Amino acid sequence: MTGDLFGDRAIGDGAMLLRGFACGDAAALIEAVSRIAALVPFRHMVTPGGNAMSVAMTNCGTVGWLADRRGYRYEVRDPATGKPWPAMPGLFFRLAGKAAAAAGFAGFAPDCCLINRYAPGARLSLHQDKDERDFSAPIVSVSLGLPAVFLFGGERRRDRPRRLALECGDVVVWGGAARMAHHGIAVLADGEAPLTGNRRINLTFRKAL
Ligand code: MD3
Ligand code: FE
Image (cartoon, rainbow, N blue to C red):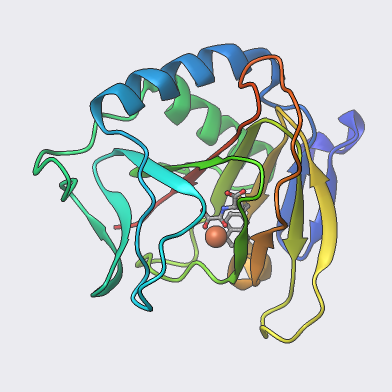
């Protein structure tokens, strides 16, 4: 892998942690998130089980990920506004492509960026991402703001997850076997981040269609 010289590491079969890869872009990324959220506000989606998620979400790109009482899926329109999601900023698209290429996935062209916002106490329980059409494309995640404990499990939900701290600017590329791993975020601890106050923002870049 190209990044090994710089301290990047494989954290699983097909998963590559690029520590600080987005540090230099963090302020611009957060500004872009604010502009997107002004058009399509963060909301707590309700799962098919009827519970509101503690993580607030919005999207940009040609499609956005949704949860509602009917299930989980990608849609070209935001059901809250009836309008298409905002276009993916060029900075987002280029950063995701560069990170994927650094991890060995050349030509990654995401059509969705799901934007997750965590307040202290929010968490994301163990799940797999399987609403995308083609699992051969990786998912690229960018962590911003407060640090979090990422839970990295196996292909089976009962596999005991490893815990990994993710900090502002860390990028992880999830491909290969790791693409189907169960994963989640532990309850977010309170804190103060220079760019986001007491929030954590996570961008996940996906090729959904
Ligand atoms: C491993 N987000 O949006 S990012 C999600 O920090 C999600 O908000 C978390 O899980 C967050 O679905 C974790 C890391 C991540 C994202 C997608 C993955 C890890 C993944 C897909 C497959 C395997
Ligand atoms: Fe996920």
